[in-house]
Length: 568
Image (cartoon, rainbow, N blue to C red):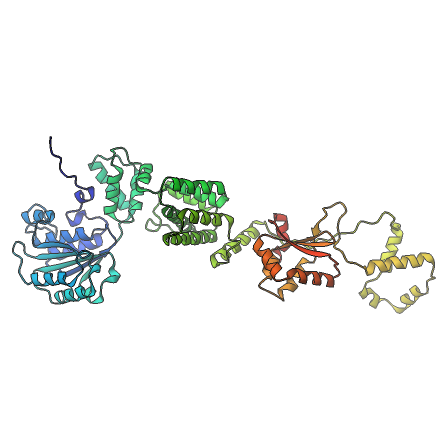
């Protein structure tokens, strides 16, 4: 039976061997090529950046370039014996070490003892120390002496993903190169080239999805490509989602639409599907948050009249269409508020909370709005909702309703009513009338009809009991006309509670004053502050003799909103 060789991973097989092969780091490779070609290389380099961006790869290419006898324009030939030995890791003069496994000072002391000897097989000895930030403080101090007074024909290349952990004394003695995250478009083009050479069927959408999931790391992208091509079939977006454990963009969009429409059934169904398929729920929340971020960026840049570059928002035409559709249905303040809730949920999950419950409760809060939340983001969302309603004409300041009492069956004739109205002057008219007219009215003979008429006039001017008027043909409950005065007066007493009265609706049936609020929290605040007692006393001072004041919870209708909008 034939012996099969060990499979070489794609990321190793396709590792660049020259500076020209390195993609996305041209600002670094061009400088290194120039230094090698003009013999201006430094004794110490510091390569920093996120994983998979080419730090170790460039270090090995630099080691070959400074030692290759056939180098041209700063590039190694990759054909001579020295280049082949360095590529295979067999060279004794190019040493690649992992500081994460060797953090102690003894490790650095061994290096200090070796550097005093001249290299035997190559012109320059190269030390590549990966994850150098893992060294201890004493190890850094030991390395500092060597970097400060380096021997000839020795180059140190330090690589790290956490530049903030490197001491300043080390930084000042190295040439620092910052490796950037590789753009998704560049990664996608590289994957297309690799898949063509390896006979892998890769769709354009899958290539873009892998590039986005790699977060700027070429090595991670190539590893995902190899993972998805395990069964030899075509690599589609669905296959990438299944292989990498992400939820999928269609599911995320459906969830966001369910949130904005208040479809609780769809929300619970989506969370249940994520849980049942053993997907990471925290990743599900993170994907929703990323989608909200894209929508927020698009709306912000569009409102500012700015052009959206791929560095800010790298989306395909189909993805951009989804962003535009969702962006037209949601306000900017709502996006910020929802992102805040998602971030809190993600942090709570990382601290050990039950992920399923946390996700469900968070999505429910996003559906129900910001009524119960008093955070700045929630208040901004609520204010934006009121402004939106006002702009769209769904809120307007309605005038106080006026009603004319229906005359009784045994009412006086029309001519008598007119005479009564004329005989009943207002206070101002009483002051402005001439004395002679007043005396004339006093000299009228006291007939029984005149007494009856005067009695009727008196009852109309000073009613014994003031009751909110009602129409006989209308509903039993009518709007309380003096509610604005009640709220304005209470605002002088307790401004912390008066906002709940401003958002309430008041109506009466003549005996009971009913105050309707939108939530239980508002009811609790009004009851705890004894606002009903004040309203009862104030109404009595205005002539309303209500038997009781009740506070109820009910959702307001659009026609009720107009009653309190004039106060906002």
